[in-house]
Image (cartoon, rainbow, N blue to C red):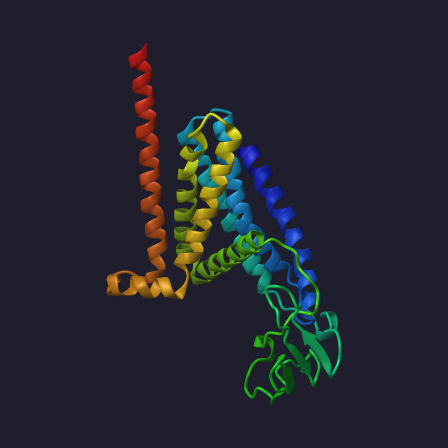
Length: 303
């Protein structure tokens, strides 16, 4: 179990880091500005490896008919250990000073560059932006051309960090299905959430990570619902996707504003998600235990 989980987690993390890094490289070419960051790709892959590693570990435990409590404890310890260790390593790596400006990628194009959103069924009217000072200084003066409207001159954004100004993509088409894009967005939000928790300290990070892993490990009963392993696997995928969506929902500002009046300062809003994860995980583990006892009693009764 330990060997399988270690290999699965490592393969997922390394493979997804490489794929995400290449995707960011392509996105850098599309946006014509910014710098590809290996650490960003690794953090995204770490979140995917966390979910994928736990799911594969649970499937392995079900297929090999391992003792469920021991397998769950092993998965929890390995998941928390690997995620916390790699997360701390990435945090330390991000504190290393960047190279000189000459070592960084240069922006493409020059003054007068025209950027436009691709015209598609989702965007019937493409908007063009003329960067008068080039993509290297997107917050400087520019001209916006919206079909059906007069051209708009936008002066320099005084006092605004140039890195915060978003540019439209260059006219490259993306045929990625929406559900994959949505999954990638949720994984990115999950990775940013783990990074923020780690920035608050190791104790809040371990509390949140432990509660999340505890909830994910409690979904083992879903992989035993039917007699068809492939159907159980897809049910497990849907369940894990639901937990990921729930995690990203809890970190939104709107949901935190909903919880704040009920807490009335007795508990920090940041602890709401871990508490909910722990309670839901306890109910799921309790259900698994009661279902196991019921099946065992039924088997003894038939004998």
